[in-house]
Amino acid sequence: MQLFRARDILNSLVLGLHPSTQDELPKGTVLEDADVVRALLVGIASVEQSMTRKSRRAQLPPNIGRTWSDKENAQLIDAFQAGHSAADIAERHGRTVRGIEARLEKLGLMTAGQRVTSDRFGAPVTSNVSKDGIKVTLVEMPKPDTA
Image (cartoon, rainbow, N blue to C red; front, top):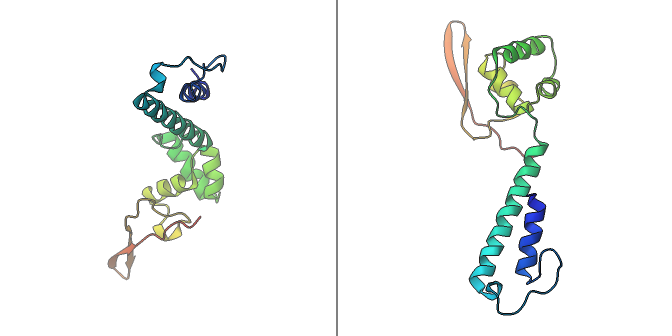
């Protein structure tokens, strides 16, 4: 059953209408019980939440959250070293710019300071720097996204 149809049926029942004909339901049915109406309203909220989640998910790139294969890592490295932007790479790989930058950082090809996106979990981002034989770990607190 489609979520839209399920929501419409539940809405009709809350209003005391037959879902198919929209005729008023007879008096004295269980639909006049306040707890039943509340339960139907909870069902409507749940269906609408599922619809919203499904809509948001449809707007995301197809490979978001998927494991990176060795082949995809190699393609990412090649594209980055060829000078392609993170946005172009993200589009080609079906991922977000944040995902591309995170992967490049994990592979050691990008530092936290080079990213245009931030760590969405708010954890400090660290990078190791070496100068004149002295190793230093830099800790950078990500700036909150304002977009």
